[in-house]
Amino acid sequence: MSNKDINILIVDDEYSVRDSLSQWFKADGFTVDTAENATEAFQKFKKRKWDIVLLDIKMPGMDGIEFNRHILSVDKSIIVIIVTAYATVESAVEAIKDGAFDYISKPLDPEYLTHVIRNALEKRELAKENVQLKARLTDLSTPDDIVGNSPQLRQVLKMVASVAKTDSTVMIRGESGTGKELIARAIHANSVRKYAPIITINCGGMTETLLESELFGHEKGAFTGADRLRIGKLERANKGTVFFDEIGNISEKMQMDLLRVLETKQFTRLGSDKSIEVDFRVLSATNKNLEHAVKRGEFREDLYFRLNVVTIDIPPLRERKEDIPLLCRHFLNKYTQSMSKSISDITPEAMEILVNYEWHGNIRELRNVIERAVVVCDEENISSKHLSFPFHSGDTSVTTNGNSLEATEKNQIHRILQQTGWQISKAAEILKIDRTTLYNKIKKYNLSK
Amino acid sequence: MTRSICVIPIEFQDQSLIKSLRRYLAQTFEVQVDIRNKKIDTARAYDQYRNQYHSSDLLKQLIDDPPDKGACKILGLCKFDLFIPIFTYVFGEAQLNGLGALVSTHRLESEFYGGHEDHELLKERLIKEANHELGHTFGLVHCKNAGCVMNFSTYVEDIDEKNILFCNECTAIIKQKR
Image (spheres, chains in turn green, orange):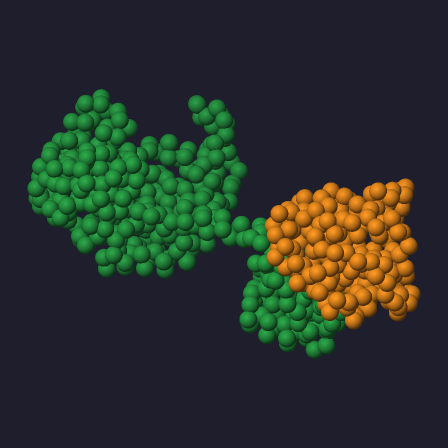
């Protein structure tokens, strides 16, 4: 940015001061204007945004102190430099308390003025950089995989926008693969806590002891193998958000511990008796019917009510079929870019299959199907021959029978688990689902070695 | 159209400096450089309280009734400690895109900073400051190029660090405006 893009306004009732300073700054190429008093300065403010204001304290009418308060109450980014005579240093200090950047005494030492302006420009640059970094951070944390234009998704996003501004506890409900974590991240990214971390805790994929240690951390020597201090996820989430994924899967003891933490926002590390206070927002997600679990006594009612202040229900993909073409093209674009392939589109015939498919694995399943299609496709468009549905062994016909899909899914998972010797990570990788989902499926289908 | 530069010494006696300055200005700006006398009321510009001379007042007198119907730039040359009311001091003053400029050797002399007299150094500093202030009259603003004579100097040491000449961009602007 050149000096020409920096606007300096000189507000002083003395003509010679306005003229001299104006010449001084013009010689540096700044865009400069002057005002004789606060009234004239206000007029100038209506016409342009001023970056730096050199402001005399003693002026007829509204004095510099009051004018300083007025302009900074409207725009805090303005850099105000108070120009004062020695006799009014106290007033200058008062102006600085009100947010002015610095003050200089008349007559000005050219060296000092140069130094103050240099500092002011540095401050301006840093402030700008800060805004840019924050904007970039927001961009980074805003999930770009939330794609769709259906009324159902728009309703979800409306809810996200409205709850994000509050600090309410939110429970996100939806089938596996509907993007519950993306919604949680969107809530966090649009909340006041966005500059602090969002910590995800996969409650489904951990044993009770492991989950306890993950959540609360432990002191060195707290148990066998605890060879060093470990900071827990709750502590790391301080000032941010904790997202409990698959909350319906936690044990009775963990439910009790968690309830206590949520009520007091205090906990102790394993092996310590020192209480740690934390400030975090709680988001949770489940694909279970927790009301039923409460009725059956499997989930604590008090914890359920504490977690379920606001509910966001994410509809399954089959209930918002109009989003499928948008999602397909979004993932097509994403994978063609990452794999450097030049595939233009999906043929209408292939798109019809994709739209009519039931998508019990929801968006995750659709993403995997498109990723595989991009891998195998060496033509301009993806056609039906490039589509393979893992639970249908190459059959791309539309299946509406949920039971038969479940049976196929169960068999496929069991087969891969046997094939990998029950190595969960490897099996999950082959099945292209995450470990948590695999654990859930094993539990759901009651699979064993 | 600038046909010449008119140097007006104000109670300035050092003829060798005037000659050197004339030669350098002619080479740099590629115009005729004349040395002229003009009656300047220095007492009027003197501020007893500050023991300094008001540079804007001197400049005003310098450009009053200009020779050659305004087709020349005027450079005043003095040894006074110059000020303008808002500043404690100035090395010189110029009218941006205007007719006149003024430079003083007062704060260019090594003796001012407790050093020994150095005539060669003073000559170099004076030529740089004269080029700089005249550059403003050709519409040049301070240049970001550290080596260019139009680079801003806060301290006298900054003057020593920059070149005596204009950078290519500033030279092009001068040629355009000359």
